[in-house]
Structure formats: C-alpha cells, structure tokens
Image 1 (cartoon, rainbow, N blue to C red):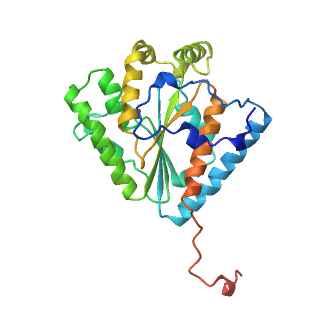
Image 2: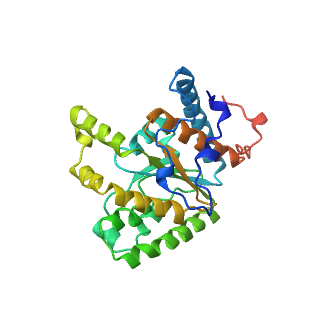
Image 3: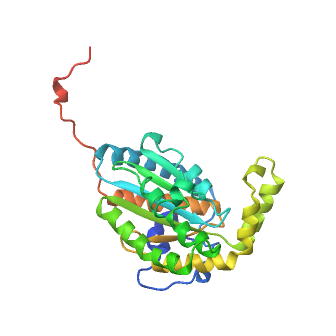
Length: 275
C-alpha cells in the first residue's frame, strides 16, 4: 500500500502533452492504493492550513495570480471541492465565480468577455466553478451555435490562456472524473435527502441522457486545450476524499513552485515603538 508521501499527484494526474488521451482509459475510482483513514484526514487538514499560509504569501508578494478551473459533469464535486479544499482561504484574496447560462449582456459580447472580467488580479486566487470551457462543452452538445463557431474556440481559448500566463496568471485546470453509475447514486441521494433536494435539477437528468456526447466533448477539450502553461489534470472523483486530497496536493505544489517570499517592510521596524 502506498503512503501519501510516495505519490506525486501532479505527475500522475496531469494530462500528457502532445499525446491523445481517451477518458475511458482513466479510472474514476483510482486512489493509488490509498485508503480513507485518519492519516488521509490529517493530511487534508494540514493541506488546508498550508493553503491558507501560501495564499497569504501570494497576496503579500502581489506578483502572480492563481486561476483554478473546475469542470465536470453534474454531481462531480465542484462545489464540494471549493467547500472542503479552499474553505480556509481568506475571502479578501480569493474569489469564486460560477458560470451559468450567459445573460443577454454577456451574449452581446464575445464568449470570453465574461471570463476575462473575472480573472483574478495579482496576489489573488480565482476559482471557476465551470468556465469558458462551457462554450465548447454545453454549447456543442446542445447545438447552441454552429459547429464552425465552437470548433474555432479551441485555438481562441489556448491563445487566451497563453496571454494570461504571460501576464503572471498561473492556471490549473481540473476535470473531475466520475462514472455514470456514481452520478446516479449522487442524484438519488439528492432526491432522498431533504437537505439536498434544492440541489436537484431536471436539467441534470437531461444532461445525463447525453452522457456519451459530453464525454466526447470533454475528450476533445482535454486533447485540444492542454498546454504547458495551462495543463489539465484528470482527477478521479468517485471518492470525494481522494478528489480533495489530490487537488489540494497539486495546488500546494503549484504555489510552492512559484518560490514566493513575504516582502520586507520598507520601514526600519527596529526604530518603531507602539505607545
């Protein structure tokens, strides 16, 4: 059995560059032989604390921003990830944006307009619950625009993300990979649990009917929009604890690789007295 320290989550879960992948080759139940236990819980608690510390340094240094993109089918755990992994982050420097159907104003602009408005400024973390990728996912499956329009968007997205990266926005993109069987169980749970009834939507069932079409659309996203500056990670998400562990480990690794430092005070603190 592996220990958490033995696993490089980023290296194991990143989508390889310039290699065409198939989603069916990825196991949504994968845990790398880890089991849910007290050590995993302890590590998750420690990771949340470490994320709080790293966010403080990111904010104080004010040199880079971090954009975290969460994509996945309904019930895959986008809200759960935000709640359990990013829960301790200071709202002063962390913004969560949920992208639903575009408004009339947003439809009057190019599809990236509403995205660009919500890109985090330097020193901040931005978390996207769904994102610009809906314009090559839902838009494609639901046939909301002609094929020649959404097909051109892959390159537009890559250029957009490259521009963000060149302007000190670090990007992590997570595809939360659950099985159709696991989604069924989670939808049933929403129906049975009165505290979760509000989460249930008839639209979830409609999207479920188009599962195969969505998987093909996601596969194209993972193959066409996976770049060195904005990589995709496929997160096995049937086990919520493993999803949270993997994402927290990858985000921590990313922030540590920025080699951030707390800035020194411009004042001579040794001469300051507080009366």
